[in-house]
Each structure stands twice: as C-alpha cells, then as structure tokens.
Picture 1 (cartoon, rainbow, N blue to C red):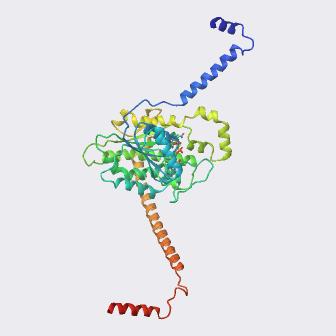
Picture 2 (picture 1 turned 30 degrees about the horizontal axis):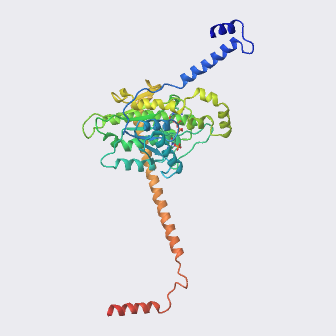
Length: 413
Ligand SMILES: NC(=O)c1ccc[n+]([C@@H]2O[C@H](COP(=O)([O-])OP(=O)(O)OC[C@H]3O[C@@H](n4cnc5c(N)ncnc54)[C@H](OP(=O)(O)O)[C@@H]3O)[C@@H](O)[C@H]2O)c1
C-alpha cells in the first residue's frame, strides 16, 4: 500500500533512496523554477476576433516576435503582406514564405520589398500602394521592424547617410504612415482599422526628444540611447498620428475608424535580443549558449512576446473609443513618461522629420540622376569603343559611289 510506504519513508527512511529532506528541497526548487517561468513567460492572449480575409501589412515579419505574430494571424485566415528588405526573388525569403504558407494552411501570404533604412524604398512601395484605384483593403498595419547596434559597436549609417537605428525604428514608420495615411482614411467606416506600434520599455530611459535632430549627431551617442530614443520618438509620433487621423475629415464624413495601439511585447528570446546580449561577438555567443538555461528562464519566447500583439490585434475593446492606448502583458497600461503626449514636442518632431525626409530625398534623387547619367555615358563610350572602325570595316574605294549610283539608277527607272 502506498500510504504505509510513504509514512515509512518519511519516518524511517528507505535505504538506497535520498532522504525526505533532500526530496522536499528538490521539489521546492523545481516548483519555484516552474512558477518563475510561468510568471516570466507572460500573459497569454485570450481575445479573438474574426480575422479571416483581413488584410494585414507587417514590417519585421521575418524574425522573432513579428514572425510569430504573422504566423498566428495567418493561421486565423488573414491575408498577410510582409514588408521585407530582401528582393522577392531571394531564395531564403521564398523558402520562408513557403514554410509560412504550409504551417498556417494559408496561401494568402505575400512579400513586398521595402528596405526600412531607405526612404526611397519606402516611398516607392507606399506610393505604389496608394496609387491603386479603388483603394486597397487595409485592416491593420503592424510595425515590428527594428534594428539596434550591439553595445560596444560603432554608430552605423544608412546608405542615405542617416543613423540607422533612428531611421529603421522611427523615421521609416513616420515616412510609411505619412504616405499611407490616405489609404488608411479611405477604408469603409464600418471597418475596424488598427495600427500597432511595437515599442519597448527602454523608452523610459531615453534622453528627452527636442525635435529629433539630436538623434543624428555623434554627440553622446550610445547604442542604448539610440534605441531608447528611437522608441520614445515612435511613441510621440504615434500619438500625433492618432490625432492626425482623428482630425482629418474622411471623404464620407464618418468619424475616424483607425486606431493606433502601442504594444510592449516584453523581453523575449529573439534574434534581435540575441544580438544585443551577445554584443554581436563570437565570445558573446559562446557565453549566451553557456548560459542558455538562464536566458530561457528569464526571457519569453517569441510566441510569448507575440501574445501582446495578438491581443492588440483582436481585443474588441481596442476597436472602440479613443486610440493611442499602451498594451503590455495583455492589458492596458499608463505611460511612464508625460512627454509621450506632449503636443509641442510632437509638432517639432513631425516638422523636423518632414524637413529631413524632404532634404534627403532631394539629395538622393540628384545622386541617382547623376549616377544614371554616368552609367549612360559609360555605356555609350563602351559601345563606341566596341565599334571603332578598322580597315576591314572601311569601305572599298568607289564602293560607296557605286552603290549610290546603283540606287540612283534604281530611282530613275
Ligand atoms: N525582443 C525583445 O525582447 C523586445 C522587447 C521589447 C520590444 N521589442 C520590439 O519588438 C519588435 C520586434 O522585436 P524582435 O526582437 O522580434 O526583432 P528582431 O528579431 O530583431 O527582428 C527585426 C525585424 O526587423 C526587420 N528589419 C530590420 N531592419 C530592416 C530593414 N532595414 N528593412 C526591413 N526590415 C528590417 C528584420 O528583417 P531581417 O530579419 O530580414 O533582417 C526582422 O524581421 C521590435 O520593434 C522591438 O523593438 C522587442
């Protein structure tokens, strides 16, 4: 019988088995780790909404939290438009989309090439999207694309000469949404349109935003400040974008049906997080692998982080009332900084971002025109070098005259 056996074990002990105290200690440790993991794994989304056939545009949908979100929404039948920086012909991308289609059982997954570090690339895509007549269906935009410079690494500039973290994490979203704004407003009034901004609690430690130009200088630049600043700017812009959507009159006169939702997924084990923790080094990667159990214990999985985005995408109450709410652990949270809602800062940031984009786009257009001209001239020179007449090409004396007189004779007859 088990009861006398257990009683014997606790009172007298059983030779060959560890003592009861040891067993209790092991059970306590396992229970503690289990509880800690359960707590740190974060909340699971329980909100559902009919997602079938909804058109969802997503940046950063090829990795980490974005990829987990894209898969979950695709499984619910949404049409997914991934904005990726690779060419659609890239074999890894083709494989990735095939996998996603297979795993989700949904064929409606496409990719569009948009390099978030290039203002030109964003404009090319977004203008193509809004040029479509009638306006294309667009139910949701999920802004998950981001980058960071690992600690200790130097400042990286985009091909257009701007600090990369600022461009990818903030300016790209400003540019994309500014151009797509008419397409968002053109959605029928009964459609619940959501724009999910992925943020991070790092924004709390950001230096204050003046007008955004400070993010482009080398002074006081550190990877952590650059990342935190880009997230704070994104949140200030998101609040201003909500006001912009609310204040613009829709063509049909109905109230705005588009809402901005900020989502903090929480610290998760993603490629981006790994790059940060390993400082982009091999020895860092070694340490990361050696401490894998600790990383597993303390950080959520990508799917765990994605729960917050799924909540923001599907929770019914977020489709009503005012927009601009912050979601963390599948519930609404207050902002930790008052400057997120400061309209004066938002105005300055908006204006200076517009000016910056205008300047960079003009400079880049000039560069492209010059490059095109140089290329054409080079091509022309190459062609004329290939056709340098040699002796064999030279007409035999009198041949020209002969053919001319033949032509003349033909004309006469
Ligand atoms: N992970 C965390 O612990 C954590 C915590 C709080 C907030 N967040 C936020 O959650 C979001 C997702 O984080 P994550 O860790 O899952 O990110 P991640 O693994 O680093 O993935 C970033 C995504 O952005 C894309 N991307 C980067 N540069 C791009 C460019 N120039 N053009 C187009 N796409 C580009 C990447 O594409 P490729 O893979 O093709 O390069 C990738 O799909 C981010 O906004 C992040 O700030 C994350």
